[in-house]
Image (cartoon, rainbow, N blue to C red; front, side, top):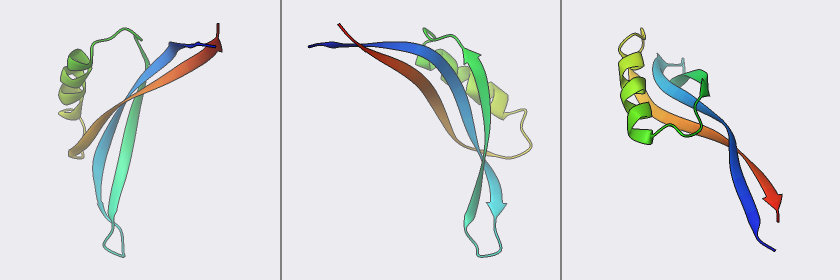
Amino acid sequence: MPVNATIKESKLKLQLDGGLNDKGNPIVKSKTFSKVKTDAINDNLFSVASSLAGLQAMPLIGIKRVDEVELQQE
């Protein structure tokens, strides 16, 4: 039977450079913004994330979109 997938929630996650720990390994900090519209276009999210990164004290490493998907069988 087919399964339907419905996006229930989206979040925007910025990964930031927190420097190095005492062993020399990188520290990745993250800042998550919830209540992103589930139908938001990825190009628009990237633009917003890039703008928000300019307001952060730490340099940007990466941008992630996190979607929570509900699966239902027909």
